[in-house]
Image (spheres, rainbow, N blue to C red):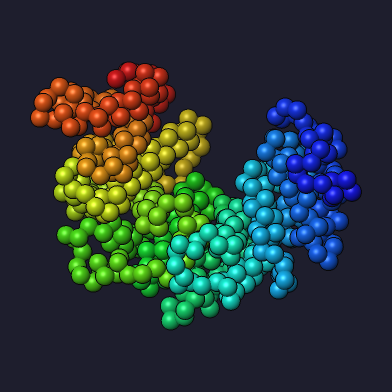
Length: 493
């Protein structure tokens, strides 16, 4: 440990002790790192003392050195302590950012099951909130600064801290959601300047999976209450939709109590249509809202998703919409709102259209197809295992009605002038093929032949070749569709 403390991660000591191949275990490396981190944690200048050991751990993880569950749990606890402790005025922010990124990387590699086998891992949420508040209230933090400064040390620190919160919420104490909501309530006042930050903290600190059990309804009511005032910025609405989408998925798979979404769906559809930014169906006031300046800075706008905030919002909205479809109702009744929304934007999927709102619309179509593909396969797997589902599963009629509505729009998007719309449409066709391969392949044949043979459609040949290159391998492998998986009479299309 003393030798490791004196050398960098590229030293001869590490080269001698790291394994020659990937996956090989080293008996002395991980214990040496643990001894060094334990000593550094208790030192006055803990972050500086921990620097060589954190670098050695990062290097070891890159070489795929195996960690047992108990060592993993202890490493996470030590790095979590280093990541959330207050800094002195003269301390270097980059040192703590390095520990935060390393702790988040460790948490992302294993789940709560590994934590239980390693002796248990329960991380407190209050130090994370305190660290986020210190960063947000820092004199060097400028919410209205130019986005070109997003690479600064302060902003990198905030982005890393938010990534750690997203990874650590799976290990929060059970039943802590009411305490989190109570602590964030002063920040969620719409008249406060911290309103945007409060919605951001709610999206990051809401516990995941079983840790949310018993408090799902409270979190939904809190997020919906914020949505009422969240029309000043797409980031604010995205933060609320992220919280709602995570609760919806946890309730759908049975990790938390069932939530009734019927009273909230009109609001979700209305806000989704506004987020798409289609000018013909929005009034001047709604357009002014969409074009208003952001109240969150770049790291806050990018941590929940690496995509643009509006694209991340449409993804969450699509998940909420698909998971809310009632399998016990008729397709006409269950899909009434969704079909109405798609009819409102149908004319804007024409290949001749272009603009930023076309990108939003294409991403929304992709998110709908992806969510539909996931739900059908999850329900098929549950049926094969004999596991009862919380919500009634979709029938073949529901899937056919969804295909009737989505397939024409996606095929139009394949030939769009907008490059992003074409890319989203190709991926959407990929997911629709998993839903019903025969139906999609028959519809695709007509478009492919026209694009490759007719002189008036020669400009569509390139996009169609991209589609065929993506779909043909899946069809050749004959992956069954979600509806036909396991059926004896399934035929290759």
